Length: 253
Picture: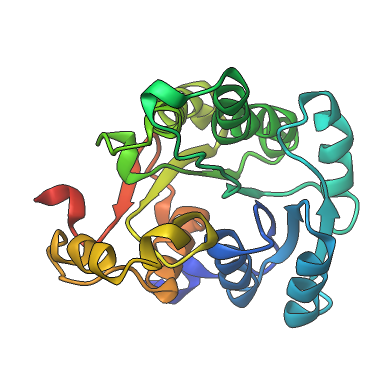
C-alpha cells in the first residue's frame, strides 16, 4: 500500500483562491501552500495580498481583481494562469453578507450578494475548467454556509446565495466530474473572520453560537485545514457534489 500521506500532497499542483486577502480565504491559501501547491491569491486589496505572498514566498503570486465583475472574467482567468500555469485547484472563498433584514433589502444589496457569492464561483470556474479537462484532473471547492440550509435573521439575500451554492456545487459535479474534475463545498460554522466580526464582537452572541454546536466551541482557523486539503487533493478523488459542513456539529443539533 502506498503512503497514505501522499494522498494529501499537492506538490506540482497550482491553486487559486478568491477572497485570499483575509479570513478563511487567506487561511486556505496558506494551507494549500503548506501542502506543496503553488498558490495564486485573488482579492481587491493589494496590500493584504502582498502580505500573503510575502508570507508564503516564491511559490505564491496574486491578482488584484473584483471576481464579481463578469466582464473581466476572461482577463482574470488569463492573469491567474500567468505566474505558474493554469490552476488545477480553485477555491471560491470570496463572499459578502450585507445583513439586511428582509424588509430592508435593496436591489443593489441583493444583486451584489448574488453576483459575488453565487455568480462569481460559476463563471470563474467555467473559465478555468477547459484546462482542467485537458489534464483530466481538477478540484473546485465552493464556500457554502450554515445558511445553505438554515434561515438566520438579516440573512435573506446571503442565505439565498448560499443555498444556491449548494445546488451549484451539485450541478458542477454533474457537468464536469466525468472529466476528472470534482466539485464540492465547505460549509463553515462560526469562525472569527471579517465576515463574522459582528458576531464575535458580541461575546454573549458568540457564546450562544458555541453552545449550539456539538463540540461546544466556535471554529478556529486550523479547523479548516484538514477538510480543505481533503477536498483539494487526491484523497477525495471519489467525492463530488457534496457539501461538507465544518461547523462543530451546529447543523447536527
